[in-house]
Length: 151
Image 1 (cartoon, one colour):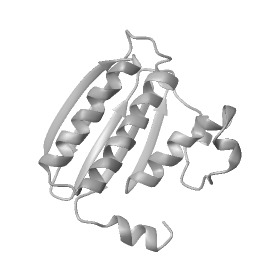
Image 2 (image 1 turned 30 degrees about the vertical axis):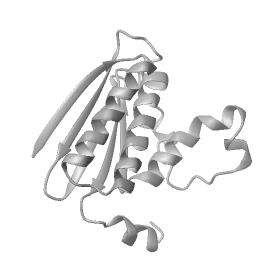
Image 3 (image 1 turned 120 degrees about the vertical axis):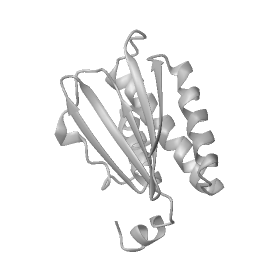
């Protein structure tokens, strides 16, 4: 397993470092251009969530992004140093895009819905020490099979 780890302060300007890293790693492991774009957007959304919601934009709190590659998949963990999230709000896979998501307060959950749509699998674990969002993209195109079955 190969591992790349970056630490960024909780300032949105540094999100682009995580996005650029995702792009480079996607290219190194020969993901298709479409999958690289999905990866970059998902990582960008996850990092922005960690900065804004997890660490409350407190620059001294770090966001750690860990890319782990093995034969089957790329796994990305985005770790914040916040106070955690209510577990009842962690499943975004069934969320539907409604008009209210596009305006006002409804936009808050749209990034998570987007992440769920862009990756093959995701999970969120949270405690009073912070939140870890794990994103998985399989190197073999398993994604089409999962979407065809309604997953």
